[in-house]
Length: 137
View 1 (tube, rainbow, N blue to C red):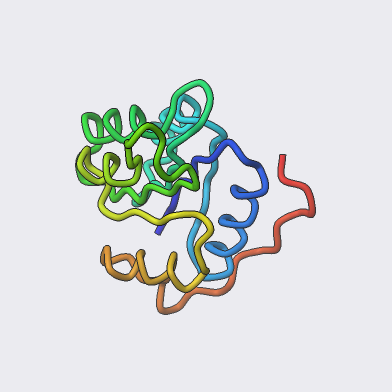
View 2: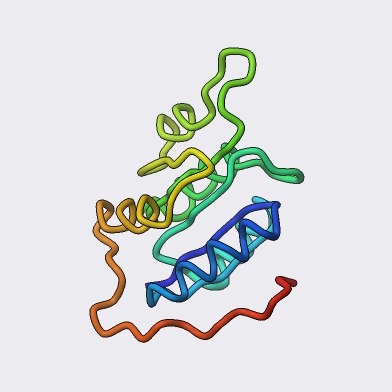
């Protein structure tokens, strides 16, 4: 099971990658929606976890583009942005095709439960992934 994590905050990408690797998932990452779409096309992940507010190409546009190109891929939208000008970005993400949403900060169990709800539990025979280096590139 391969998961693409798209977030402009390298610490968030690093933390999510470590959590998911330790749960037995394969993980690829991207720092914005534009790079994320390139990784999606090259790596064919089963799930995309995308932040909403990012430079270059933000998460809402990324969700729309993923739905056009890969309608079967599962999408989890994450954001700490909340409401701006009466717009709830996570509600908008869900209405545009995200399968589930998580407000930052969230607990590890919330993320793993979300994957299970989407029918994507950690592999039964999973061996925890390798430790990531101290600094994410």
